[in-house]
Image (tube, rainbow, N blue to C red; front, side, top):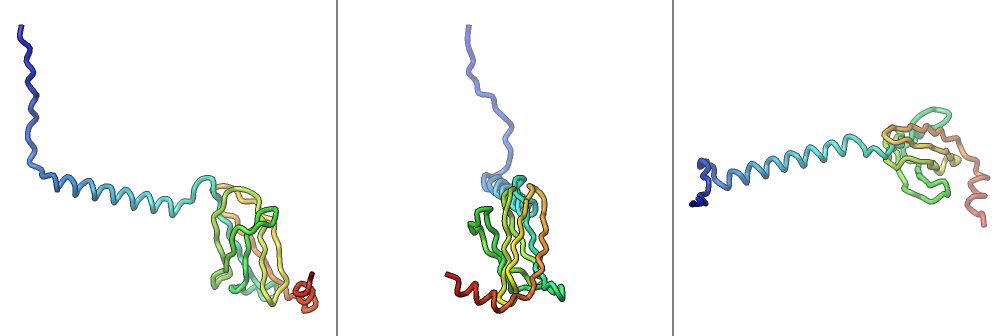
Length: 143
């Protein structure tokens, strides 16, 4: 009884190693770019988008130089945003309760409570009203 340990031979392909490396590198690059675009376009499923629109209450014109603060329910600042020329500012956050505080030197501050839902965009319109000089002075010199 004899046992044959012959190695099976596969037909030889006439492809160089550098061509295989080029193909693998190209495929990896395309997959990487595609994944990044999908992540950029579609937010994570447990995140929601907050869109704040800041306007003058009388004229309804955009107030692009306001300061928008996103706060936790206990008033810890998460981030500070500036609206664009159309008065809009966007930010992606985890689902949950937040507080939005909008301020501007020529207007009285406004605060809104916001509930963000995952995979949804929540728009909050804030109309700023002219602040009183006395109120601004009290805030400035408050101890």
